[in-house]
Image (cartoon, rainbow over all chains, first blue to last red; front, side, top):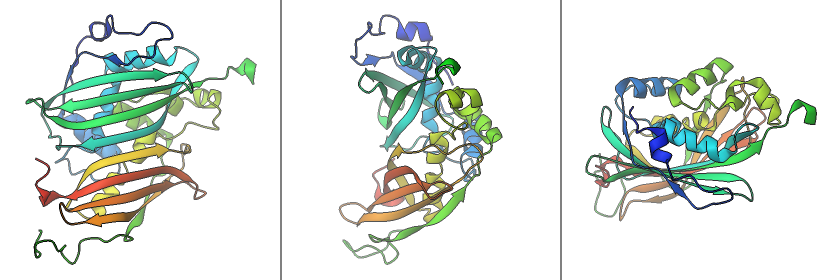
Length: 148
Length: 149
């Protein structure tokens, strides 16, 4: 998969401390690489015929450096971890193997309770929306051994 | 193949209340979580490092919620191959720890044929003690509904 430079994507877009306005990343190019689709199918439940893109496959694009970096930044750094609270997928078109797509990503932070809400839209080459994802991550403070 | 009088669903079209047979997935060993982390990119130490899990208040690394959510697609496709999953939304209610498995099941909440052949499904995943770990809802459509390219 390909992606724009994470620093470039997030440059100037990170919120000020305390700010909770949504942060929108620059569009990111991705591809449904056949090998990555096959590997994902192999590890996710036994319908590994390899001739389709699994429903939850787009979730892996949240691990792209531009998105991941912003998630880590908004999570609060060391001592905090994101915990997956809810997830939704809304498909308008199937994704196809070995095809280029564009991601549009928006991340919003809430403080009470501490959560990140990520909204991602996957569009095809004609800029038609294929699928929208919403991911809610609860931010959990890790307990140091000295706190136990 | 859709082959019925206009407005009438074919005899085998599911009805509200129909069950989607239960299916077991896992147990998910720690190695399976590592492999899922590799293919999904979700290498959150919570799932891979027992110390991180402990610091988060868990007895061990929890199975990725998305790995468990991914099990609903084979459940539905194993039930009927003529469906397209248009929507899936889920809440992760409880962790399932590495080494444990889940049992997934579904039920038809609503069934429609017109204006489009569509089902609303209630999907659940339960852990070892039959505790509810994922509560989900899916909207599935017949592949011949011409709604999806």
